Length: 238
View 1 (cartoon, rainbow, N blue to C red):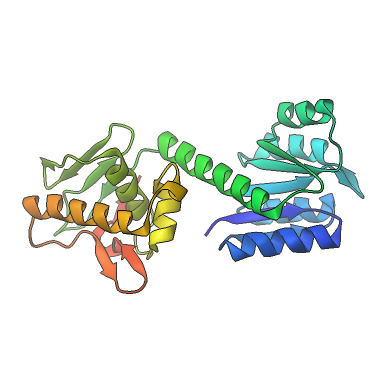
View 2: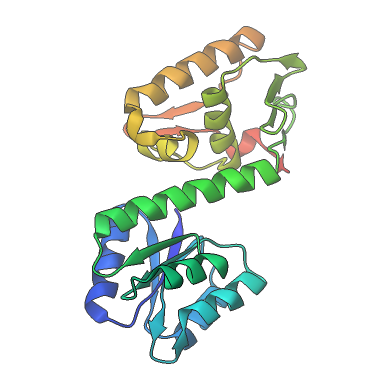
């Protein structure tokens, strides 16, 4: 689950943003001041920050610079200022997006999800997925950077979507992902895909793995929940 820090001093706006993000399955932390926000971002592992520019104890632009000096986390600015200068400054200091009050919480949620997806893709590119597994499943290798999948020494040809889907499952080994979560994490445009698209890709991957090793269930089905790759199949993830 992604974790978002919302920094906003207006209670009604803070409450509506937290509710909207929570309704989408996004964990939220909230702060009314920069002082509170500094403590939270240092103590918690945040995936994104929604940041008001005008706060009682400081300026959001300055806080953005502080965050950029220590963390690589996307930032969406919220502000009552609508001038082009403010938007440009927000982007120049490291903001990833900008919304002017009043704004639609639905639009904010979409922008948050887009930046979270881009962050996941960036991390995936920076850190190729190469699992080393225990005996009995010692030959699985998934490398997103080189777009290769190897099982027991045999190359497995997969499509780009199958590769991203498999990478998500391997990175979250032991976790059960719902179809919606897999579409969100593995597809560039999850809204353009149907949940049965995930089933189809899993079916194709299973057929390819069984052609190499019919005895090993690589992708597990959890009825009514989704799919997973067990931790017992992945001993070390680099």
